[in-house]
Amino acid sequence: MTEFPGTGHPGSERPVRVYIVDDHMVVRRGLAAYLDMLDDLELVGEADDGAGALRGLAALAADSELPDIVLMDLVMPQLNGVAAIAQVTSRYPSCRVVVLTSFGDIERVQAALREGAVGYLLKDAEPAEVAAAIRAALGGEVHIDPLVARRLTQDLRPGPSGVASLTPRERQILALLGEGLSNQEIADQLVISERTARTHVSRVLGKLHLSSRTQAALIAIRAGLVPAPE
Image (tube, rainbow, N blue to C red; front, top):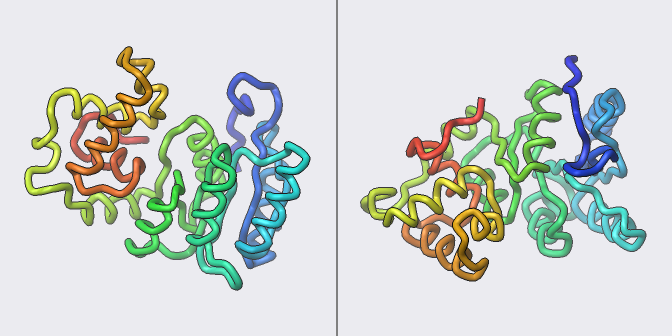
């Protein structure tokens, strides 16, 4: 395994805090062992299903110790991953969720992204790719398994005329979404208000018939507005 030179949380010397949710103990133990090898990533908790994850995150939130990243499986007892993602992103918006699962069917991918996941990996990914996805999510970027991304972009059908239906300003907004920028970051870059940026983003998603910013980022990559991740 190759260790990445890491810097931890942006602007901080502390490691990136990671919480693992998976119903297979061997997966949790393997991920924990790998994270322990990396100076800039730190395991702060784990759960074997979505319900347990919400309890664990609530306890960490009470101590102001929420993780930066939640690695989430999708198929689990009691509360599945998609439902758990919806609750995590709603209750703890500072936590970014990266899916790590065995299933790459488009329905599950779209459901996870729709509920707020910012990364999607399959369990046959190399350990270093998991670390890369964690770091990408922390930086506001989208990291999706290449095969899943190809399937997803093929499945996305943005409007009758697609990106061509966007105004120059909306294409600019789409490109910034492709770079993973938040509404406030878009506003700062374009010297507009956050409210105006939010309106532009909503209009772009509506015109392209998309349900998430992650889908918009993939469309931006597909349209060549931003370079594809290596």
